[in-house]
Image (cartoon, rainbow, N blue to C red; front, side, top):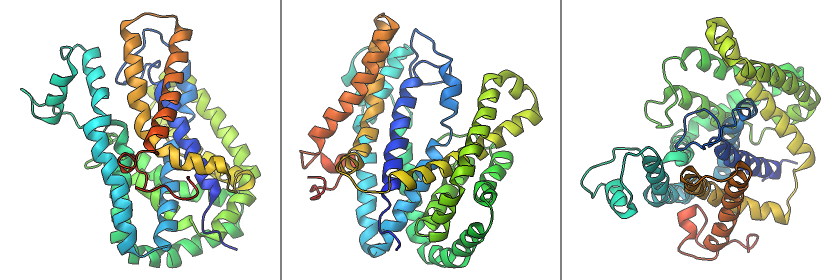
Length: 381
């Protein structure tokens, strides 16, 4: 019997956001460009962080599936206002309020502005002596993309319903009749093509408009989730492919780790670099399939903890980077042992998100600002 809700996807959504939160903490210590940098370097984290390459693709697949379940349970006229409100309000509030401290500490760290948050904030909002000219959605770009894809889904809903029957079901049925390679390779083919044909010409900007390569990647994964959400053939194939997908993920992960550890050699050779980029795509999809299989086998059931985390994770996502950056900035101007610094940033981020959510969910006016319905559901209460 087909489920009306997949609890395994809820668990994976929580898992993906949790990985993202710790990934952003790690960005303070690696050599990659970010808002701030610690006085301590931990470049050994880079290969390990590189192995999380599928985290955002996983989120977009889950988001597409969530939209499918939601839009099938109510009319588009009811679905659209509810969903748009729950995305537009947090995005607007986040850009105006939550992201501002991130820009402030970044500019202070770079020595581009003088101390004084109120003066900065007037400039940030466009009311000061000069305009900062910086797009302010920072880590909330995912919300902006999700909003755009949701609007596109509603606009194309008749076409998507036909595509589900005419394309999705036959393709998933074909996958179910074959070996695991069909599931592990065929859905990744579009991203391989984008990687080779679009990525070199359209660098990722997370600005939506003009970010055509990344839009192609993420929108394809979003629509894949939409098409696969209620396909019994797809989920049955995932279950059957689990042993193979685990082995493939370990093998591809080992190759990717070796490439990341020899990054300068790989990037110096154009052919090797193209192979490396294709490897990342295949690994990302294989780990998504593996996570789907493991979650479906061991975590596809409701629980009180899941109910709590499902409601909490979006406010956590909105809050986390601001907390991380503000606390991290203090350590850029105050020298402490690295163990104290790391522990303080992790604890401040996690506890700050937890405390923030506990306040948010109890204050009716705050709830919509962080993507929660105005009134708590019975399950959440």
